[in-house]
Image: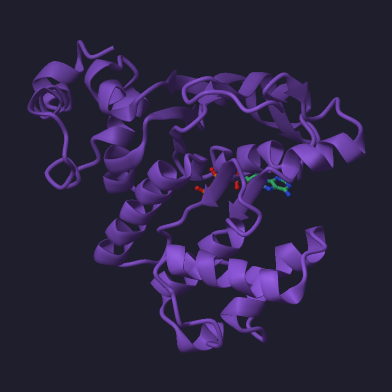
Length: 281
Ligand SMILES: Nc1ncnc2c1ncn2[C@@H]1O[C@H](COP(=O)(O)OP(=O)(O)OP(=O)(O)O)[C@@H](O)[C@H]1O
């Protein structure tokens, strides 16, 4: 795909239906991810967030509908073309998914060894650059068992970035991290987006993260089994008429912790109060 400017559509999902056999997980999904955005896939447990991620990264075939990268339809492309589309993406799995018997340098070098013919010296150099980008300079020879959970996530991130992807996918990056480490990871994700110009698509239900770093999002409703809201979550929390979306975005105890505009906080708080909820939708 030709390079396009920030803000142009990089992924377009059209009328996507996802199913396991006759069990429809989500139907008729429509949304666009713009280049340079941090896009969040959100929704309650079991609504299909990970399944959607699997459709976007080429691991699961749609029951119906399209996933476009630029103008190329991922699932209509020939296998070799699909592979070259997916080569432009990197994935950070929930656990960090590092190989425990390999050092951090060996883990990060894997995609480079698998997909490039670069000489070992150059691979070592790239690996050190990527580890430095995520704050792990000097940790090349450490094994995953010798570092913390947050560091493992960052090493996973360095590996996801090894091939300089245009799009980075994160599956619940903050899962299992304490709030401070999680906030640092958010800052790192923002910094990487700004420095590298990458587009980031992230599955998460961490409200502080969602409000702090998302530019855009889709909300998957696990009862209606379709997307009931698309947009910037900071706007969504103020403007939604959907009870489920509002409940998700104003979960008790979290509104005070996130940096919402004052108007959003008061509107969301009043919307969730018993007196106003009757007219909420
Ligand atoms: N391999 C599978 N076969 C059949 N059903 C599946 C399979 N994988 C997931 N499901 C079902 O599909 C639905 C969506 O699952 P998915 O893991 O995508 O949800 P999720 O939103 O990521 O959940 P969570 O927030 O709990 O991680 C669930 O009802 C799940 O039980």
